[in-house]
Amino acid sequence: MVDPQDPGTLALPLTFRRARGRPRKPNALTPAERARRYRARQKTLSMHVVPLAVHHEAVQARDAAQAEVARLRGELEQVLQQLRH
Image (cartoon, rainbow, N blue to C red):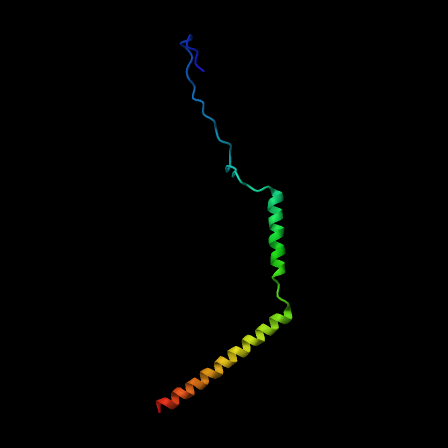
């Protein structure tokens, strides 16, 4: 603050320095909230585990479907060969 009576006082710039580091976000989570969300994510991931028997059935069905596709492609090639001759 400048004293109008005293000619020797100067107006000093009133600048405030920011704190070091990255500024805090206004909606930052507390460590407890972050831990709660992490545990909830881990719980939902553990619920999506497929039983081994179901996995084996799906693999067998896939293999059977691939074999059927290969057989049908072979038949298609035979039919195309017959049509060409």
